[in-house]
Image (cartoon, rainbow over the protein chains, first blue to last red):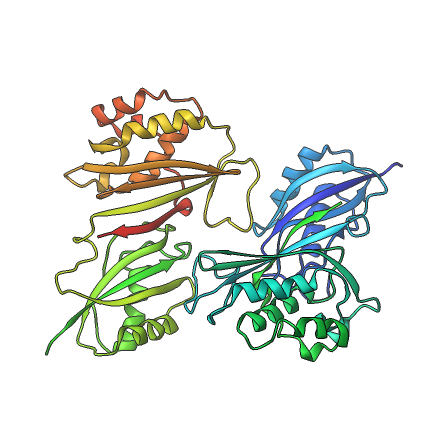
Length: 246
Length: 246
């Protein structure tokens, strides 16, 4: 029996999930998606996601793939799977793709966006999608600090010890900070990310912006590889997996 | 005992409320706000809102006022009231204002925004804040139709019979339609709005955009004053009270 490889583009609000990856005794996006696909295909499939987003993290452009024996056309699959998914998860695209495609291993880079509301007063409409941060921030200092992180570095200082991969060298292709009104957006593109890496980078850049850390300290952080010298991890709800590039 | 007049700028997500105005046996924004203020001031206040938003309608710039004997400074009031409010309602500003100010009667105009996602596929991140509409739309025809509605007219065709005010003449100062990617925004500024007026206007403009109604029919609608000749009412969740002008 022949199989085909199916690619999914997925949007989800992470608020009510314990992240992407399957875990015992808790609801995850991967599990919810697997259940919906099982109902449509009457078949157990193994879904590979491009990025293991943490609890509370959102996605506008998560990519996943799975193999199936089903012959249901892609367009029909999209509607059928969405009809079995809760409204905080949406399949945006379904397409047939070459057998060699693997959502995680084939990915060239991923782009995460972190959204900060730089205000003393909270927001109601956007409350699940941004971190509210009251302190005044020096944008030019944050941009200078961000530049030091672009390139290939050992990011040991920007991850959590317990979960750290053995190889902590990653390449940040781009790190952009953009201000729109009271909102500040951090866009980070890299070939891969360590556990809590984006949120530690943003937390560290905020320390620089608040002038509690000097721009020059960023280079020390990359060299000394000491997590405790970096800034705090900012909350998950401001983070969104925007795009996966292949 | 002297009183002072306090002005509030309020943001709320209407999803879990039966609209702004106090009603028996159901949760409204006005009631929730009154409860929070009572807890802070230990005093019963009567809150006047600029616009009576319907169930499910949001606000970025609702304005309200109330009289109080309290001497608590405005800045302190803001923090205190927010601490008693659920997170889907936020006071963005508190200020002292002249006694003659009344949020509803002093208003010169109000601006509502309606958000449409012109796509066949739903959205997860924005699901409570837009109406998903799959049919292709002719933007230029909708813009032409919108122009016919600007000015002073009897809007009987664009309201619900049962709740209609006796005087149904209103002045639309501006009606703008803007496309950004797959989103279409309808911005309507008027000196006042009839019940469900914005949502009936948008529903009618969509009929024109879909070419099920001719642009020239809009003038007939204004003249004949027959509700049943207008388009359907679009869902509340796409609507947001953006600004009140004084």
